Length: 605
Image (cartoon, rainbow, N blue to C red; front, top):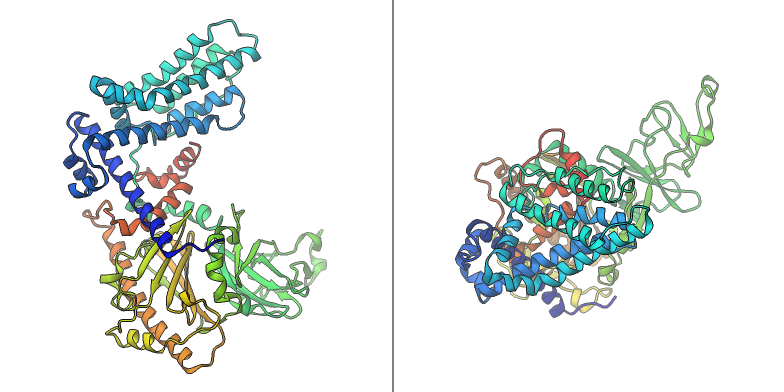
């Protein structure tokens, strides 16, 4: 892929931040209209609802009229997108109508705040012309979908003698009427009952066609958050969903090719209640298996890494497995009844090698590591990661924090000037967080101004030239992340990764390692040493911040989350989690035993 220019990267980041801020102000406008009415909206009230200064509102919207029109346009587009998602596939008309019902009652668009906005624009005569100009064509298109589906059902069935226009208008009026019901009694409105009534209307018109349909149970217009609420950092049920859906369904780093050179070489992965072994077979191919003996579930290999020249032998009872995972031998095999060795090989798991790093996945994944990181492949290639070797042992720490807090820190550079003196002296203002299609990366350019700290000043001075790197990478630190838990840092002199593995809601395994290409030059060795000193100090500083945030979540004064435009990476990270676990959007903690059920319901929307 083509490498974007620095100006293009900055523009991409700035556009993302601007869009985030505009969305924040539009959400605040919706709340302000719901609370004060359309005619009493002021930019000052919107700024207060957004917890921003009025000057910021004026920067993005030059007038109240522009803000109100763009808010209505945004809501109309959002509603229309839900309708289009119901009819975008070539589905049967009954399925289209059922999808339309689900889309209409989606809590993201069907809630009391937005009901108040629709009512305000339709009810105030001066604003009605704005409503018709923006929403009139979309309303007509929605009616056309309903009428077309009714007409198709009539042509397909025996019960077809009625006015389809009248029936379609009745169905449309039934749906629209619920906006008023929700606005009138938001606390007692029964969304499930409303859906059941809509389906009942269809059943009466088309007997037998909708008889087997049961309305999906969904929460009644829950309040949603952009940033995840503190309860998602402490709830056991939400933690279980994270482990299953975010981690076991994603690629996890298990090792590097430098440790898997010969047949029988292996590395293991332990975490998330799972154990894996990656081993090079006699055919020189890598394979990955559950590190679980098929006899009693013991470890087939006990060490973190090593070599099995002929076979993997379980240290519990001595069952042995060939390097391809097949069962080789069973001690006292005659004592077992109907033992079929052909069916008792090690259970395989998915494996992928990306630039020398070996990943495993315990569940089916949506995409490969290569496709996820394709956007930065050309940026990574010059570093020759596949040829690197470890320069320090892997570190492993158990931290008494939720795994997300660690990434809440590393997903923004806003704290660098104050929180990380070493990095700030190294980069100055030459640091930038970027994003493209959901993939975050960051650059820090080593400035020429000498740092005051000893490690920084000497690193700047002794960093040598590396023939394998382009000129732009000679004095650049480059970071990128693989969702949900892995961060790579590429330096001119070396690279490192760090990874989180959740153990419990308030307990995380934090692990990482450094690698480098062979280079015996004195200045190269010095640069690697000074690099590690700088990063060690940075890690100590981040650890304090992480602990403080974790402690702060127990406080009644913990803030809702007011982010700088430089902290867009935090909201982007939360949004990735919420897209996979929509129950994480809820402001209030669900009742015990309901988190998974609510998540399933919201996932259907």
